[in-house]
Length: 86
Image (cartoon, rainbow, N blue to C red; front, side, top):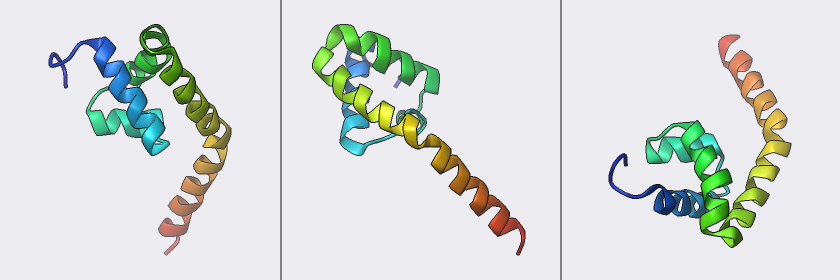
């Protein structure tokens, strides 16, 4: 993805992906092959200037993810120890 599109366009693509898939920053970064920090910067700083409406939608999804992250982390830990005990 590097060098193929402008960062403004990339921020819109990333924002659309996050909203459509209710995706996390981590899964979005993995899908597009870029770093989490790049995704986060694009959808929080650049997208706000380029497309404020989409930014608000992305912000809602990211807030939900932030509220649920401790639950997902606990489930992942549970699975880790469940699989190791066998």
